[in-house]
Image (cartoon, rainbow, N blue to C red):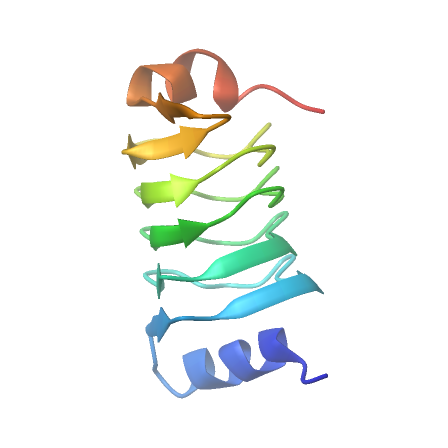
Length: 122
């Protein structure tokens, strides 16, 4: 099985910022710098703990069970994603946009994120 995270990090180091259709399970982006990255139509079951994801975009995919605790998500954009059991405790979330995401059969709003999702920890 290929190390998809290493492939993404190598492409990012070459200047690529847009990634489409990735499926990554059981790997880790912990402590990596992925500022301004765009992940579209991706399915992730990974850790982004302590990662720098300033101005990152996650759109039209699945981030169920992803771990964003302690990450820098300032200015990040999360849209049209399945987000069940993802974690964000202690993440920097200034300017984070949360729109059209769903969990457990319900739409999750920006207000939901701000009021309880970002601080909830399993």
